[in-house]
Length: 140
Ligand SMILES: [Zn+2]
Image (tube, rainbow, N blue to C red):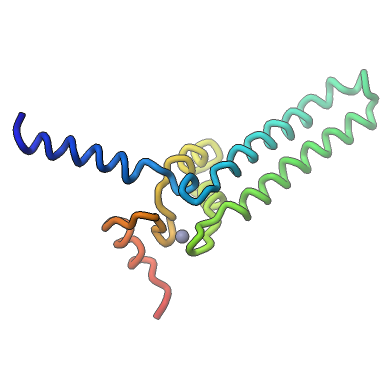
């Protein structure tokens, strides 16, 4: 094996070790995604299944369940959007992902993204994140 090959293998390993942890994992916010998905599924189920509850529970109760389900969905969106933030610049990362990446892509992005899109926050600063930090400099 050529020496250059070994270097590349080592570099790949290092990349995986240093950069394998997402921003959410590192800032202990990953559980919020699970809460979000869980509440969303529950809210959707309550809203969609209310039609089946007409018979056994009566219309009024079924409508209450549907309204509660919708409130749960809205509340979950608001809570997640406000609580998942960059610890450094307070950027609402969940809202960013939702608006920039779309609903279905934002989860994959959130679970993979290693640095803050605004300030490049990363626990182990690398040259790439430093460069991004200076680009979005706001202080005089
Ligand atoms: Zn940030």
